[in-house]
Each structure stands twice: as structure tokens, then as C-alpha cells.
Amino acid sequence: QVQLVESGGGLAQPGGSLRLSCAASGVTLDYYRIGWFRQAPGKEREGVASISSSSGRTIYADSVKGRFTISSDNAKNTVYLQMNSLRPEDTAVYYCALTPFSIETMDPGLFGSWGQGTQVTVSS
Image (tube, rainbow, N blue to C red; front, side, top):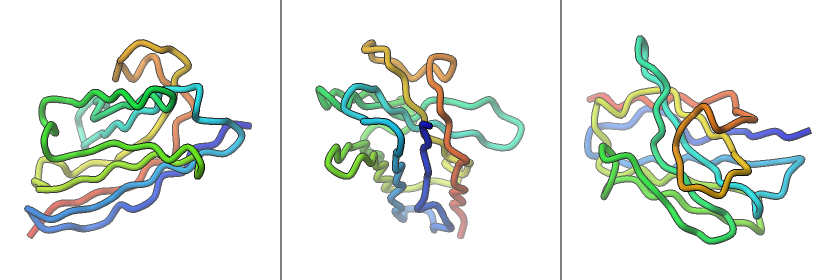
């Protein structure tokens, strides 16, 4: 059974950093694209970044380019999201999910096996 577990969320000050982890079990990430998504209260879930574990190719939402970095450690079957220069508008529940499609996408509708999410709050 595929399971993704997010961790690393918490409270950060504006300008601060957090690193989220997405640990996978029941699946080898080498053959998937893994995405990070977020959902703020009253808003739709949106793609933040995604990575192909086989090629390492990444894509980012414009709102996080230059501030967030997605990476994959296939030996640990874990994907990370390093978040720097955090802003209050980054506050949301962050989820990871995977897709077998090789296209570079962050469309939530194409991803599955969603984790339970981890809360990120950016506030002074």
C-alpha cells in the first residue's frame, strides 16, 4: 500500500525557512513525479513544485520561484521542499502526492496517494 507522510511544518517568521519532508513507503519513487501542493483556508489546492525522481527535472509555481527548492533522495525514498524567504501568504497546509505521468505538471488532478498534510504558518 502506497503511503506518503509529510513532516517538517510549523511556525516561521517572515523571511525565515522551513524544510518539509515527504517520506514514501510501499512504492519506489524512482519511477514517479512527486509534487508538493498547498491549500490555504477558503482557497483551492495549488501546485507548488514537482520533481521527476528519475531525471531530477523540476518545475515551480511562479509564486515560489527563487525561494523554494524541491529535491529527491531516492536512497531514502524521500522528497524535500526547502522553503526560504517565507511570506505570510505561504501559510497553508502542505501536501505531497505522486503521479506516474512523465509530463512536467503540477495539476493536482493528475496526482494521487496524497499524504495527510503538514501545517505551515508564517507569522510574526
